[in-house]
Image (tube, rainbow, N blue to C red; front, side, top):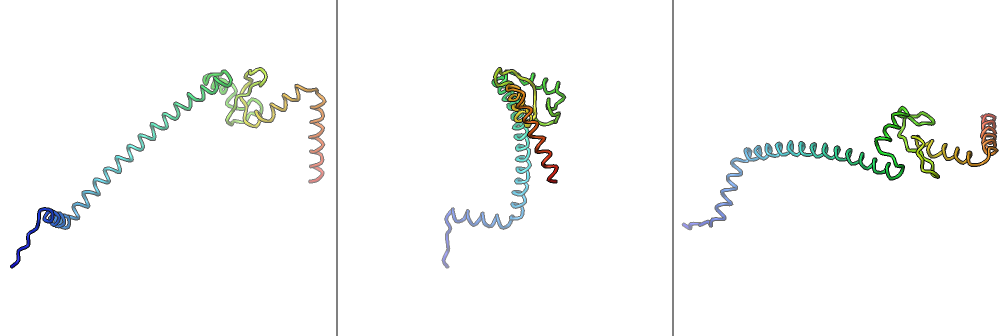
Length: 156
């Protein structure tokens, strides 16, 4: 008879295979439980990271707003919030409760109040132009608008 001799490495491989196949179910269950614990830990860690990120974002966005208001308009965030509250959280012209922007005079830099986007970009510049020029321009503008209103009513 021929006797086969196995070296140490081959014996270990055979042993590991036999061990794996005999206890495969137990090994799979153990790995599954380890993964479940790991998933829960990862979820907790991600939730904590998200909370920290939100807190930091809120903190730094407040600091940024304060810095921008100071640099652009000479206002602190506290003063801005006070103006916002004094205006009942609404636009000083149209009264809409939207995001409000700081309105200021471009010549003097003086802050006038808080306005919605529409009033800040359309109404106030138009009013400034009219006030800087003579009043016949205002009369012409009224005449123009009324003329087109009348034409649009006739067409309907």
